[in-house]
Length: 101
Image (cartoon, rainbow, N blue to C red; front, side, top):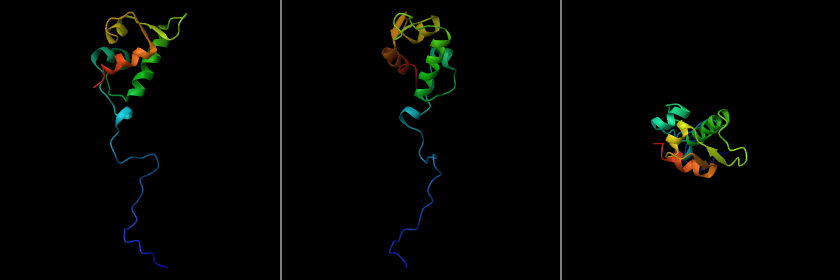
């Protein structure tokens, strides 16, 4: 039996493959030289940048032990956080956004 569908069947992309370039959160962004000192100089998607910053914070024990939501910035992070000694984990994303293009 023949159907009246005039359109030829198109091949579907492989599962997980995308024909469109990455956008939004998954688009690789270039870190500034200040942020590159923490996460490296290669372009990364925003979630990966945040993940690498958290790795750095935990590796260098920069979370306030009394208030784990507070990050005590060392010299490299102060350059990213606008010279501030302490930022909350919620403020951190605001400062990171300023260092990604």
